[in-house]
Amino acid sequence: MKILGVTACPTGIAHTYMAAEAIEEAAKEKGYEVKVETRGSVGVENELTQEEIDSADAIILACDTSVPMERFAGKKMISVSVSEALKDTGALIERALKAPKYSVNKDLTDDVAEIKAKRSEERKGVYKHLMNGVSFMIPFVVAGGIAIALSFLFGYDAFESEGTLAAFLMSIGGGSGAFGLMIPILAGYIAYSIADRPGLAPGMIGGAVATQLNAGFLGAILAGFLAGYVVLLIKKTIKLPKTLQGIMPVLIIPVLGSLIVGLIFFYVIGTPVAAINTAMNNFLEGMSGTNAVLLGLIIGLMMAFDMGGPVNKAAYAFGAGTLVAGTGSPIMAAVMAAGMVPPLGLALATILFRNKFTNSEKEAGKAAVVLGLAFITEGAIPFAAADPLRVIPSIMVGSAVTGALSMAFNATLSVPHGGIFVFFAVENVIMYLLAIIIGAIVSAFMVGFLKKKTE
Image (cartoon, rainbow, N blue to C red):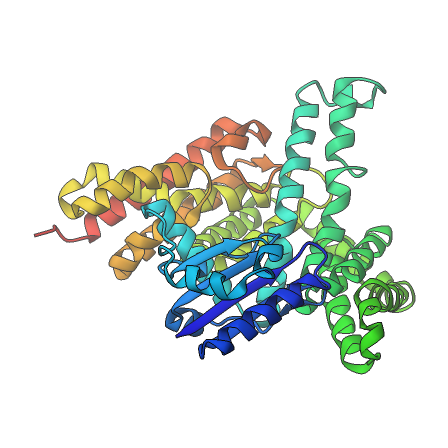
């Protein structure tokens, strides 16, 4: 028998490792093969691979904090508190071997979630760390952008009057609220991806310094990577006695790491990065006419090319970065519009050209409507996987048309996600919606003409 475990207590210091040791000893006493992943204050250690999970007979989760669950689908699994794992671990193992398999009912939405999780696992190196930071930053940008948009609904000057609802909304979303946290969060979670939990504080503090220096999105990225690798260096070079190891993640690493990152920014890289950031923002603000349309076309092609993959995410990160100033961005508007087109275009194709899709694809088309409206580009992946040579070029053309039209119409957006649910934050929304509709129609008709009839 092969038993796997995951342990995690709220503080991640003592009980995490005590529970892991208890599971290991109990399994070895029974003659079972065992491996336990610990999620402590120093990060994830002894991490379970998918190959090990696939070959396991049972999984024991002894966790008082949340852990990734999708990887355990189809395996016998029990979930208990850390304290319960310390009481009668032998009986716990037998319960795990008799436990039901962990499963979920799957539809297109579940397929998309599974694809996203798999892609997340496959990310490597710089791309993985950057996307980790962006994913944690997005909720702050969304919350801040919506609050700012709601403030603007009262009039562009209303939020300048102290004590008004508009002013409070602007404070929640603006530079002193959600948008003020964007840069530190991005930097912090890039560092977190590199060095795990110990990298979080130096990364966020580095991001705060980047904000002070007006280094923007670019400064946040540099601060995050610098903090992450500085923390790894500290962990590798500073070795304390076992009795003092507990102070590493709460004292040595955050203080030393933050000082190193902050001082490097102030003395070395902060000023030049701020100059580059300002020049880039001025260039983008001055872009108009043919150049803007061409940029929108390129953004559209990138958003549809791999539907949530590295190319798509590069375009998305670029668009989200233009929101740091706290104003509506035509680039972000083009990114979201182009990202909505692939699932919407394919859903429309299943209606207009029903004889060219299987029954399961027609059913998936209904879910694709919702995914497209919510700006979940991955809703197109099952269709593209079944017929990539016809589907991918079709959705790329439709998204390119939408991106170009969105830029030509000068639509702007102050929120990086949400699809139709945040259209109130779009400036020139009627033309923006028209751009999406035209792109979806183009994709639908291309797919309809290129695909063969089903037998």
